[in-house]
Structures are given as C-alpha cells and as structure tokens.
Length: 258
Image (tube, rainbow, N blue to C red; front, top):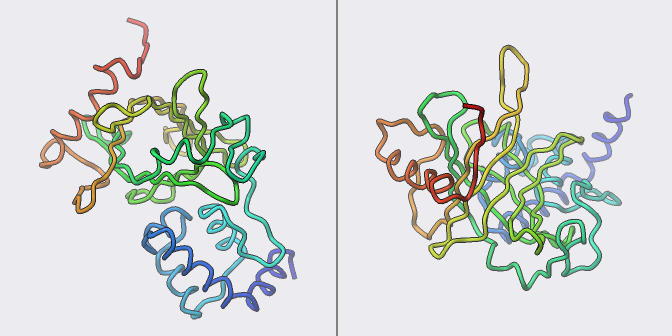
C-alpha cells in the first residue's frame, strides 16, 4: 500500500467530520458548493458525493479543499502553506504589507473580473474573484470561481504594501507564480491593473502572457454573464468599456516595440 493509499484509508474514518466541517464553512462563508468545487478544482459531482457520504474523501480532494478554504480538515493536519508566515492573528505578515484586518475590510467581497480572451481574438473572458480574510493565515485571500475553465482557477493571497499603493493578488503553486497588480479602488469601486500569467501555446507549451485586468464589485441581485464573452453578446459592450479603463485611464501600461 502506498503512502497516499494509507492516507486515503485514514481519511475514510474522518469522512463524516470532514464533510460536516466543509458544510459549516460553506454556510459561514455564504458560498455555493459549485463555487467551492471551482475553487478547489474538483468536480461538483465529486464534492456532492463526498459530502453525502457516498464517496470517501481522498487525500488529493482534502488537500485541494484545505488550500481553497485556508483551513485544516484532517486531524493533526495543517492547511497548505501557500502564504508567508503571519506575525499576528489580525495582522498580515510583513512580506504582504503588514496590514491590519480592520484596515482592509473595505476590500472584502465578490468582484466581476474581466480580461481579454486568450483563445478568442477580439473576445473577453469573465469570472468571479472573491476576496476575504482567512483567519488561519492571518491575511486576505482570494479565490476565482465561475470560470468555464475551472481547472485553471486561481487561489492565493493578497499583498497590500503601503509603499506602492497597489493591491497584489499572488498565486504560488509549487513555485509557479501568477500575479495581478491592481490599483486602489476608484470612486465607483473599480479595480484596474495588469495580469501576468501563463498562456497555453503550441501543444502543451506554456507561454508567459500579460493582459489588462478589471474588477468591479458585484451588487446583490446582479445577473452577470461569465465565461467567454464575444462581440455579439449583449454584455460585451459594457465589459469592454470596463476593461478599456485599465489602459485608457493609465492604470496599466503594456509596452511593445513599434
């Protein structure tokens, strides 16, 4: 029996406790099961069956959920260390700007996120970004959901250094970084900046890519199309106008040789 198989067998006895804890976190954070599945990059069917006791939690599934929620679900376990070490329960680590929880509550919430499509020329790509305080890590964390390519959804931490006055959304997955640099909110609550990530190139090759990025806080009752947004769709004009602010408003500059 391999190490992972032994861990999976141990988790079988903890399944009911893990399921209860996950249900409590879903309720406390007011997120849907689909959102959690997207954040953890597992199928909704896998999550539903595990929560219902129809399928045992595997170590891989539990690790993904722990990383998404920033909590430990296993007895004696600990959440994945995806953020720098914090120096206090209500103060983020110095490496993230040493911000106090009370000073950044204004940033918490759900945001419509728009960037250019990497696969459809002239198209846009829209998804949700949720920012909230993660008590176990003593910092703001973020998670993406509602992506049509959910396996690429990002989960990470938020850095807010006073020196630059910008907001950094940072993902570190086994040493592979992805970074969004955003302005402080405009008067209407918009966040604008630039995204640096990897784009799928020829075959399985990954290519560094940068693109403008725009976020807008979601109001209660908003019905927002997500996924690929093409020019023939009603939402395209508003989404494009929102994204254009990132460059036209000088929130981000994309330099290329002429």
